[in-house]
Structure formats: C-alpha cells, structure tokens
Image (cartoon, rainbow, N blue to C red; front, top):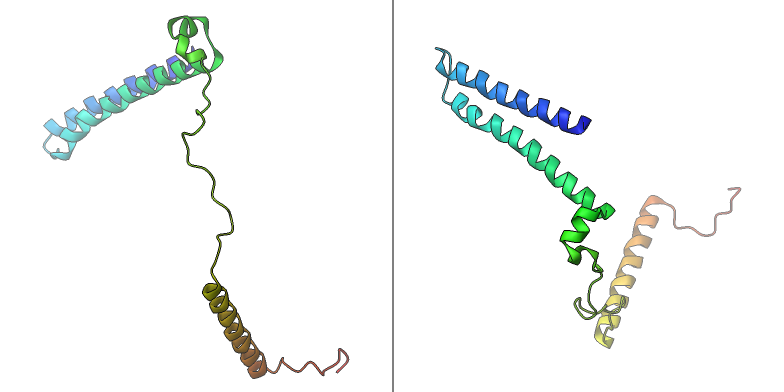
Length: 133
C-alpha cells in the first residue's frame, strides 16, 4: 500500500510540475520549450502507474497467485526451451590445416627473434650472468 501511495504522490507531483510549466508558458519569460514540458510531465506520471501495475502483475505471476494461475493456465507450463530450438555447440578448438599450423609456427619464431633482439638491446639476454654478479 505504501508503494501505491508513493506512486500516487509522485504522479500528482508530475502533474503539478506540468501545471507549473503551463503557467511558465503563459508568462512573459516563457518559451516554446515549456509547451513540451507541459505534455511531458504528465506522461512521466502515467509511466509511474504503468510501471507499478506491470510490477504487480509480474510479482503475482512469479509467486503463483490463485487469481493469475486460474485465469492463465499456460502460466503453469514449464518455461524450458524445446530440444532442437537452439543450434548445437561447436567445438572450442577449430580444426586447422597443415598450412595454418606452419604459418603459426613461423609467426611464433618471428616473435621469439624480436623478443631476443629487445632483450639484447636492453642488456638482459646474457644467460651466463649469475645471481651474485
């Protein structure tokens, strides 16, 4: 009940803001934009009630209220997808041909060479250095 009281007061507030925009439109400082707000604020109020009614309907459907289940027996039906509706799963690792395998190995070799050049340029490639040096 508190939810509906809050929704009602918010909707009344939206209509009141729309009325205030109407008074602004008729004043000397009013602009045409106020006319849009005159229509927009009551729409916001109507949305609040629509959202409240939708929330109540969804809640009753989810809890299985006797009023909704008696009127809508299809609501009791299972909600599982029928088999064969979705496509089957593909393998996670696609099969590759010999040329693709060789090309990937070539790219890995190039990457190793580039990494070795970068390590050499930074002076970090010498494996002969001990931990104490």
